[in-house]
Image (cartoon, rainbow, N blue to C red):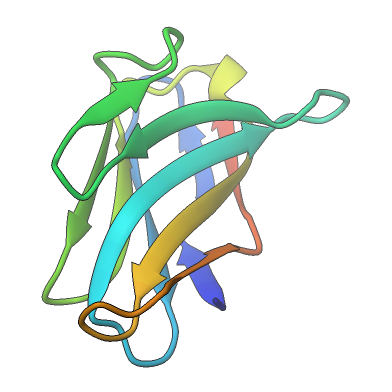
Length: 120
């Protein structure tokens, strides 16, 4: 699955950004979704995840500040980031699992990454 991630940029500490991630092609449903991030010199780490049933899970470092969601009409996954901190600076990657038809198989893929820079 090809994914187009966008919404990154430069923001001051305390500010907000909303990242978007849209899978290409025909989409019947978005099932599981997640965001990860990788800061310079660090390994990729989990940020947030959501299931088709509505359950969500967050890393402790972002809990209460970030929200993962999806818009089924737009076939887009979001990560709303509020009260950003300099330590949130990283390249953010989305992961999405989709179905292209009723009862069809799952397809998944990773976005290309979008850079978020938070200045102090």
